[in-house]
Every structure is written in C-alpha cells, then in structure tokens.
Length: 107
Image 1 (tube, rainbow, N blue to C red):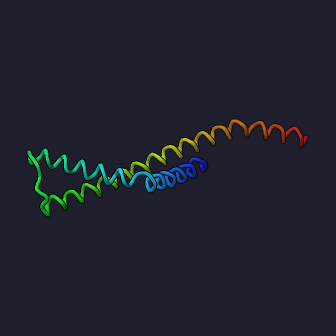
Image 2 (image 1 turned 60 degrees about the vertical axis):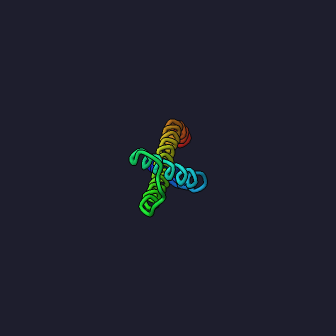
Image 3 (image 1 turned 180 degrees about the vertical axis):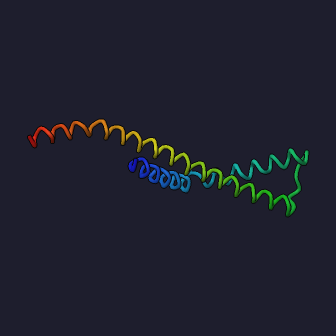
C-alpha cells in the first residue's frame, strides 16, 4: 500500500513537471481561443476589443491553464498509482519465494 502512495506522489510531481514543460502554452492558447469563440457565439458577430472582452479573455486563459494543470497532475497521479500497484503486485508475487528459501536455510 505504501508503494502505491509513493507512486501516486511521484506521478503527481511528474505530471506537474510535464505541465510546466508542455502545458502552459497550449493552455494559454486554447483558453483564449475558446473564450473568444464562446463570446463570438453569444454576441452573434465579431467582437470589439473593449475592456470587458479583454477581462473575460484573460479569465478564459487562466481557466484554460488551470484546467490543463489539474488534468496533468491528476493523470500523473493515476498513472503513478497504477505503476505503484503493478510494482506492488510483482513484489508480492516474488516475496513468498524469498521467504521459502529463507525458511529452508534456517532448518
């Protein structure tokens, strides 16, 4: 069980690092683009870049970056937990052989 917790923590850190390396720019891009497309559909035509539109676009950019960051960390944690589980199962399958060998040597 401890191996799975350690795997989850390592996976979360790796997911965060992957987000910092690969995720900030796409989050910035798609957050801003998605916000402008949504506002375009709500207004029904081209937008004038007023202060309100710029503020909403900045909020969309922040939301895009945060969502991509959370997704990276959660997926990293899931993959880390799965790898910890696999290591734990492989370790448990090998553990009885070691104990049987030790029991035969002590007799």
